[in-house]
Image 1 (cartoon, rainbow, N blue to C red):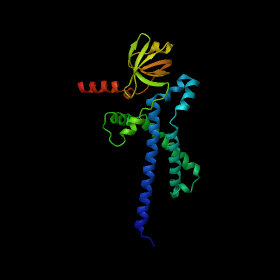
Image 2 (cartoon, one colour):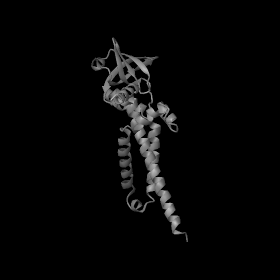
Image 3 (tube, one colour):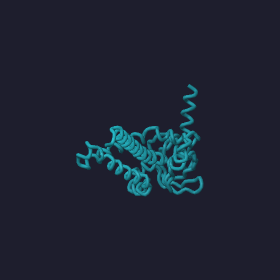
Image 4 (cartoon, rainbow, N blue to C red):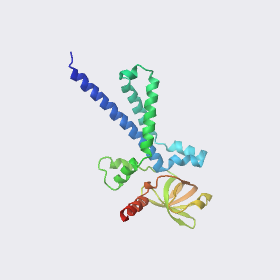
Length: 224
């Protein structure tokens, strides 16, 4: 006969394992949402069929696959809980997916990851800082997300979330409504620090993604 404490400890460890796995899945999903936003590819459908095609080619498929595997793992663990395994598997799977997607989306649109990202850039994130510096703001060929820092005769200059500055040259009608401080998504080939834009869209996104805007907001708070 095994003592009662054995079953209590086993149940506690099992519950702890499920909780950690659940939180990790939510973290991965929220990071995917953050990645889609900070890279600007979440707004590619604004460019029509061309943008949708580029979107599917730019999705973080490895992270998406990891999230699917972890959700399946959660379901396997959940089936060991009495009030879950007595019900059809599709019920618990739908509930798990719904909770993970909702919680991941809400965390992904919050300031959680952006604060970690800039903490990593400033060297204040010792453990996972390299992860955010390497993957926090992914760059894709011919897709450029930035904030307009100045206008030029033939386009404008943008600052990316990584703090890089690029001159955008465009004959597109989309630049007529662009002004300083706007967040834009540009499709075009880059040569050095110059982007020859084929299309430009002004988007609504969190300006705290960009270092200059964060510095400006800090200065305003400091000067109050």
